[in-house]
Structure formats: C-alpha cells, structure tokens
Length: 120
Image 1 (tube, rainbow, N blue to C red):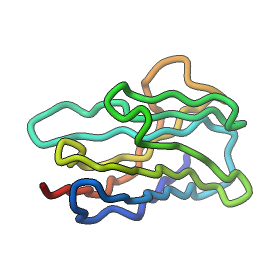
Image 2 (tube, one colour):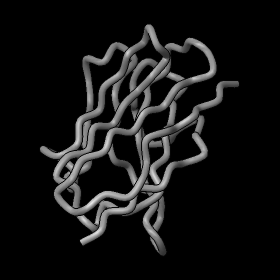
Image 3 (cartoon, rainbow, N blue to C red):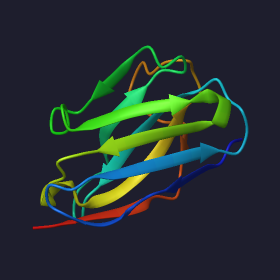
C-alpha cells in the first residue's frame, strides 16, 4: 500500500500558473499521473509519466500548457500548469500505477485531491 499526498492547489486568475505536487509515502517504482474531476463531470485523465520519466502523455485539452515531471529521489511528481483557463477548474488527483509505465488510464492508487479554481 502507498499513500499519495497532493499540495499546491488554490485560486488563480485566468492566464495564471500553479504547480501541484504529490509525494508518496514510500519509495516506489510506479508510474504516476494526474487526473481531474470538474463539477458534474467524471474524473478524467490529465497527464501521466513513466517511472523513469522518459515517457509522458497529456490530454489534448492541456497539451502545451501543462507539464508533468517527477523527482524519484524525493518520491515526488509535479504538475506545472500555465495559461490556466476557467475550464481547468476541478479537483486534481494524484494517481499511481503499480507498473513502471501506463498501459491504460486505470490507476491503482489515488490521492485525496486538491482543489484548483480558475477565475475568469
């Protein structure tokens, strides 16, 4: 079992930036990712990264604006969000896959979520 703890959410104006962080409770060899759930919508894939960091993928809606990265020495994964839009408003969840890479978008572990609100 592993716990994921997110931080870095908050309120920002459109066009602004936020950086989300997620730390795991122990060292893992897991692929990591970020998902989000907007009000009234299902939880959706945002970005994922392999354990080595060599492979990442993004939802079309965030490509060119968001960047996922990780620091395995710190058991951490990050999501840098730039040029934020009101439609990015959601609860953002850190997720982990019990594998070195993502072969689907079905996490094995979830964090508790952090709220990101983008005002117009």
